[in-house]
Length: 219
Image (cartoon, rainbow, N blue to C red; front, side, top):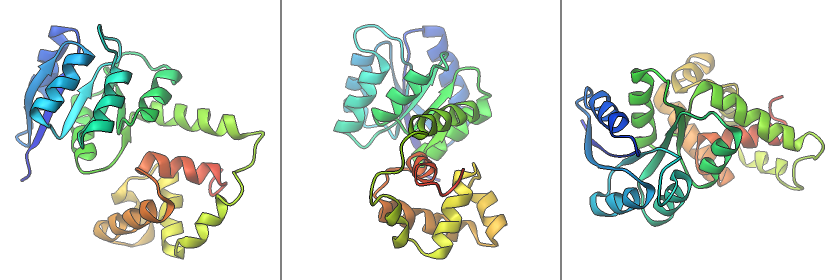
């Protein structure tokens, strides 16, 4: 079992302690450092090279968005933003800064642990309500504008099965659900998703969902 190292960055000590207790109920996860502001968070990532950084947004010295941008541009550490605020601008800014996850602090402990594991495995994960906000934001910005010229033609690079997998992904299904719908193994679904991201030059599942909506693959 591969260990997942985590740095927690939040300016509220009680939150930090609670998050550490929750995460370390899973034997696969180890909290290696904590930080009370974004600047210290960046330094802790440099010092410890964790698998994942769990990042608050509103913090002194350097906010979580700026810290996320520095971390993702300078290291292979994945960032999950954890915040009280379900604001659209925070969500978009965090993803643009390179965050692989965005979840709310009122989420269930099991969801938080799963988010850390999913992101550590190379996936992207959002709270369900934030996924809908993201889709509404992106598609709303595109209602009066068609997909960029040539972007839809990128679908030609995908096989029929890859198109099916991308469509189911855009409907909000996870790997297990996609496998059931298409009568595939989860390993095969993972392979198809990796091929889709590579062929379309996309970073993660979130970008793949946005692409599917943008080119009209799903309405």
